[in-house]
Amino acid sequence: MEGKLKPQATSQHYAWNERTKERQKELDLMGVDNRPQPVRAGDISSNGAKSPLGSAWNSAGTWEERDVSKNACDLFKTMLESFTHNAGGKEVSFSEARAVGNVNLIASRGKLKVGFELDLTAKWEVRTGGDGESLAKGTLKASLEDSDCDFFTAFSPTKDQGTISVGEAISLVKLTQDPLKIVVVKAWMLKLVEPPP
Image (tube, rainbow, N blue to C red; front, side, top):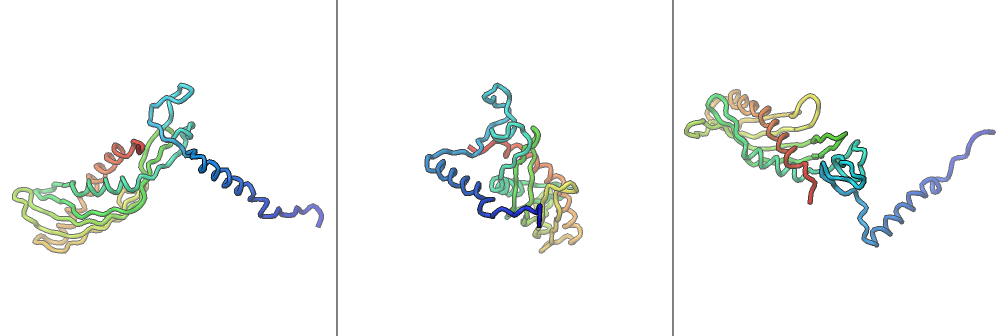
């Protein structure tokens, strides 16, 4: 058939990739670290201009993600276990928290945000505000996501034991969602922004 192009051999088409791997091996043997190097906001670049948030290679400051999952999950666990919420003379607290998933610090057009998708498990307890008598205990399973609609995409407390009704206990635990969201996001932004040493 006239005018029809013959496809290139696959090995020729992807030959550039083999050469890239060879160059990377040479750099590794010489001890050259060619990964993007983190810079802090406000650092001065070689041309005298202020650097964008993120790494030195992202001079346009368009988009960059840094995985901070371990630090963020550890911080979330610590914060949840020290978090208490008072409502109607009753106090809700959490223990044995465990968060797993992905958390990224995103630098985009000079602004920072935290992108996350986590699964959370914890134990909760409702106590009286005055003498600290235990009224109910249970478990919590939750999913957190940086979606436009909500912070918690699922928030499912279950009551295991206690003297107050299941409905009252679950309602009190659900009241912690909004305050917890504010505390976590503020702490993540303050604690995770600095690049690792």
